Image (tube, rainbow, N blue to C red):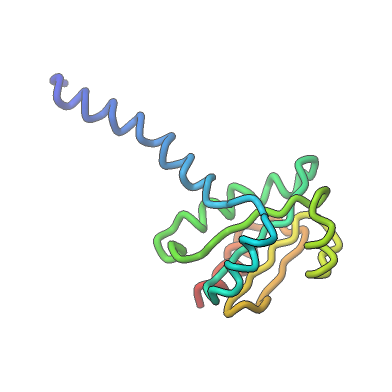
Length: 131
């Protein structure tokens, strides 16, 4: 292997963690005023209601990150709501448990999935955001 090939391979290897990091950064933390703006825009919004201590929530995250990193989801905004801190959001949207995924389109909730870890079911629910 010559120096040019080695350099190209090394740069590709270094870029891989960066692209994974970008996928993980797809979710922004919930802030009421920003969320209202997102819903008002009418575009698709995915909300993940999570708790740091929740194993189901942790299992959902890589599945959602993988799906939302696909080009078809480039216009989907993703918001993470902390189950233990955002009681007003939970009351407003009638969320009773962590690990709930909400899909909004046109400012209205169009789908909801709770306590699900099956990648196919999660992907099917997220697909409602772009259908």
